[in-house]
Structures are given as C-alpha cells and as structure tokens.
Image: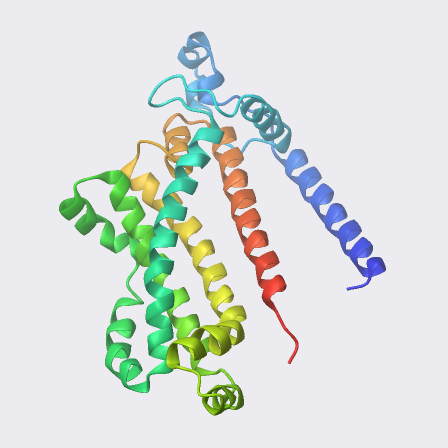
Length: 276
C-alpha cells in the first residue's frame, strides 16, 4: 500500500468518524443517567424518564474520568477499568496458552498422519460446533471455582481454530520439501521441526490469531455469567446501575483491547511470512 493511499484512507476514516459522532451527538438529547440523579430528582419523576443512549460527549467525559485513574480499588464491586481488563487478560491468556500447548502438537500429529486424522475427525466435528458457554454449567459443577471455570471455557473456545489450522498447514506443506528431507535422511522429528514447522508457521499463526479473537469475545460473556471481576462483569455491573454512559465506554474499551490483540498477532504473522 502506497503512502498516498494510506493518507487518503486515513482521511476518509476520520471524516466518517467525525460525521458519525456529529450525527450521534445531534440526534441524542442529553439525559442524566439514574446514577447521576439526586434523590429529589428521582422522587420528582426523574426515574420515570425514558431511557436514552447518551451522546458521545458524555461518553468522552466518562472515558476521561475512568482513564485518569484506571487502577483504583475501592472494594469488591468498585474497581478501575485497568484492573478489570487485567483480570480478563489473565484469564484469556491462561486458557489460550493451555489450548496452544495441546492444539498445536495434536494438530501436527493429525496433519502428518492420515490415520490419526481419520480417527480423530469425528470427535472434532462433534465437539467443535458446541458453544463454549454451554460448557460453563458443567465446568462450574465439576471445578467449583468461577475463575478456573472461565479459564476452562477460554481453553475450549481457543483450541479448535489452532488445532484445525495447524493440521491444515502441516498437511499442505509442499511434498517436494518433505522429499528433500527424506533424501537427506532426516528423522521424522527433525523433519517436523526443520522443514514442516517453518513452512506451516503462517497457517498456524492464522489459527492462533483467530483463537485469540474468539477468546476475547467469549471472556466477556463468561464474566457476565460468573461475575466478580473482569471487563464482562464491569459491563454487566454498570448496566445494573443503569449507567449507560459507562456501558458504552466499556464496550469501546473491549473493542480497543480486541483490536490491539489482533494487531499484535497480525504483526507476528507478517514477520513469519516468506516468499517461495
């Protein structure tokens, strides 16, 4: 992409952003949230006002307030957005890394062995379509810990894209390269690490990139169910407080964190790309 095209795309994005925010600000009347009303206003009918989406100006003010002190801790139900994101990232990365430790070796085995692929494919096709959140009640019953149950759900949702992409990448490595390794009498282990792994790395990274995105989506819903801490719980708690401004702010934060995770994996993926 040329510099000129990048600048024009950036300009168009900024125009679209400012126009969208202007329309949103113009059509949305300023209404106090229930959490911002005094007791007198509530008694005089403020609580009966029709709920409306707050304008972007209020969201920006709330964002400034929250981001000015993101790591405050005023009790179990009152923690800064930075702390909540930290809890969520810990759960996501723990479940994600555990899934990678299992999915990538098994994916290698499936990709290199047609017999293993035929044997395990029915189980993969049966378990893969199950929603990760469907495992939450069973996890809570067996593990009896909400934190570990949330990590288990992330493990379940992360494993399939990595496993399938790894198996696909390994199985589709050019046969010429594998034959060259056989010509040099390399062992199966050395062939896997010196020939197949570098060739399949971009496809494996694609699966890992997909998995981290799904994991970040699922943790928000999981934390809404189990409560306690995390950005998902933060959204649900602010909704229970009837604070739509904080709800919108937290939604935007979720989007930004997800985008940064995807960009990080995209950068690593570009580093591992190669020209044949």
